[in-house]
Image (cartoon, rainbow, N blue to C red):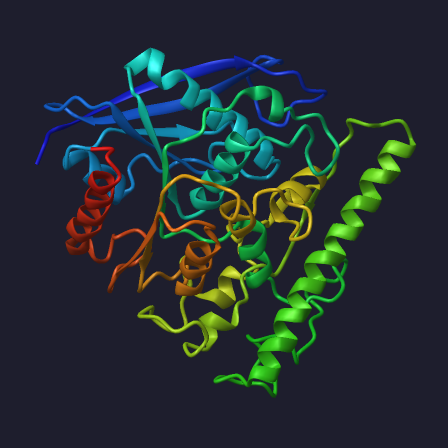
Length: 385
């Protein structure tokens, strides 16, 4: 096992924007915080670049274990490090692109592999889609964001590790459909409230009930989207094109998979989600999309408007792809890994289950060696070692 060296550094680039959406820093400049994590005794022309919309994963067990095994890593924190309230997915792509374009001149890396961990999976696929065939010049809210002109460097491969299909799709599958009026979020429809003992529908749920529940979740996402677009239109009609509004979304951690283990079956523990007891997390402060803005909702949470949709992006990319599913994952269930794998439109793709592994390998560190071995074998097989 190699000794690991951690080297923090930053990438700075210019941006033209009508408003600031992050705290601090000089206007017109973006600072991308990065960390290189490398073995002390091994040089490499290949680097795995991990990123996530809200960053913060440079000390993930698998990231560290890969470096100990001799793999060079760069962890890229987009500008929204630790706070997705006003996050714009298109800007995360630009930040990741700034990091990647700097790698060869700074470190001499020739092969770049995207490490898509959890929410970084759909970001990696979105990036690669736009790097191979750029099309985007504005965000879903209509603000200028020139990805076409950014000259993104396509990655040479993508590793999707315990990844979900997208932030918007995941939120929608976790939304509490019993909230039928956003202005009265705690007056809930008992028939759609899976945490209400008075609900006549109890696990194991019927197929008809699950279909009703899923349809109501999508309808709620679309109601919020419609309201968001009305708010933006009203602001623009008053000549306030750069004005923004923040709002709170209650009830975003309610998925039938957490209360009924027969839904998307796996080795995960029943009655739990990745942030604890689902009933409490449903209205707790750390649930998905709890605090957001009009523009951010359209970019990262709107099922119909987001450009960052793993399945759609995966269908348009041409690089080799590795998909690893952790079978005891409380966050990303098997169907997400399979949907991503099946969405890739070519045959240079590989799928593996790590049986018994949790989302972070915190509960099962003994399985890290297996996951690292899968990654190394894939890198070798693709000629990236």
